[in-house]
Image (cartoon, rainbow, N blue to C red; front, side):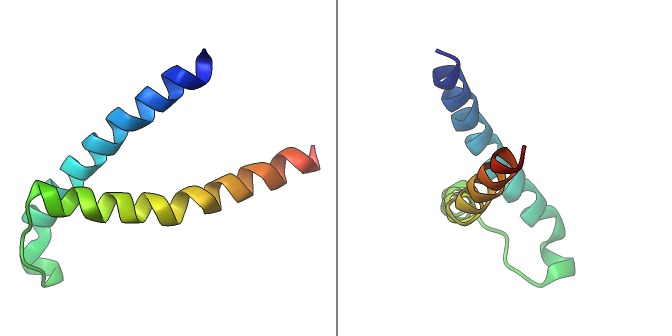
Length: 68
């Protein structure tokens, strides 16, 4: 049952992190030289980042578990 709640928490964090990405891109667009983008683009960018980072984090966690 614990993994079910962890999955729903990750889903909520996904939408929150996409919103934060959109907000910070809007604030910093002049300094970093990009056009501000909307929530839909932010969702796509966030899922892309999560698809890259999640396997790496899983591999690190697995290797740490094997050491101990």
